[in-house]
Length: 403
Image (tube, rainbow, N blue to C red; front, side, top):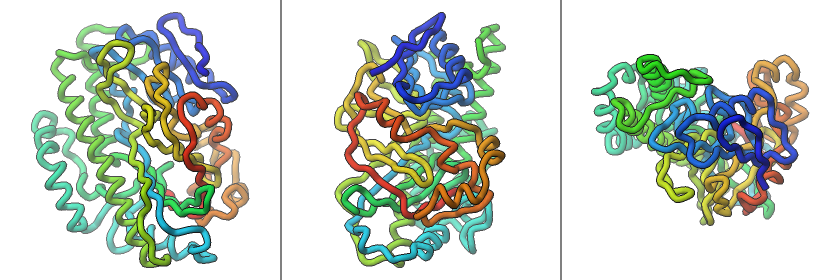
C-alpha cells in the first residue's frame, strides 16, 4: 500500500514501505506535487531517488502541460527481454567467448569497438540499420530539424543499435526454471539527450519570458496552446520510437552473436519491450491527461514489464495489476542509494569482484559505480510494490556487458 508523503501543496502517494527516501528527493517530490496543473496526485515508486528537476521513480500526471525535465534527457530509455529455448545445462563452463561476441556485435561504452564501432557508435552503419532509419525515422526527424535546426548536430543514425554508457547493459540470465533469457537496457542515446536538454532549456526561457516563478527552474513547462508544446510532443514521441527501435536492433545483434557461440536455440514465447522514461496521453481519474513516467514502467492489468536489479543481483519479469492510485505504474529497477562519485570513492575493484562472483562481466575500476551496493535492496523494492505487480519470472545474471 502507499504512504502519504507530506506536502504543503498537492498530494503525494508513495510506495516506499521498507525502502529509504532521501531528503533531497522528498523535497523534489513536494516541489513537483505543488505545480498547479498536477492531476489528482503524483505517485512515487520504491526505487525513488533524486534526479534533474523531477525525481527518478515518479509518475507525474499533468493537465494541459508537460515538464520536459520530468521526462528527462534519456528519453525512451527502457528494457527489453526475450526468453530462449536454451537452459542452464546448455551453457558452456565459461561465458567469456559469448561476452566477447556481444561486445563485438554491439558498439558500447565510449571506447573504440573493433573495426565497426567508434566511441560507442557505428563506423559503418549496417545496411539493416540504415534501412530502418530511412523507413521509420528519417522523415519525421527532418521535419523536427526544420523547426529546430540546433537539434541536428549528431550522427544519430550511427548511434542506432548501440548500447551507450552508465547503467545500460546486455545480459544473459537464468530464470527460476533454468531457462536462459537475453535482457538489455538502453534508450535514445545521444539524440534523446540532445532533444531533452534543448527543450528543458527552451522551457526555462519560456518561463523567464512570461515572468513565471518556479520552486525549481528545472520544473519549467510547456502549456498546451503555446508555441513549443506541440514541437516538444513531436520530438519526444520521435525519441521514444528511436529508443524502441534501438533496443530491437541490439537484441537482434545479440541473438546473432550468441547463436555463433552457444548451442542452437530459438526465441521463446515471452518477449517484453517497455519504456521507463517517457510521456504519454492516458485516461486517469476521469480525465485525459499527460502521464510522465520518469524511472517508472506502465503496469496496467496484464502488462508485462521488467524490473532489473543490479550487477550481481536478481531481476524480475512482472505483470501489472492496474493499480489506479499508481496510475497503473511500477518501479523501473532497484534505484540508486548513492551517487556514482560516492560509489567510486567508497568501493574497490576487490569489492566489485566479490559482489559479481559467478557473473561473466567486467571487473575493473571503470564499473565500480555500478557495484550492487550502490543500489537499493531489490527484494525490499519488490516487497514495497506488491499491490502494483506480480512476479512472473525471477532472473539471475550469468553474463553482463556494461556500457
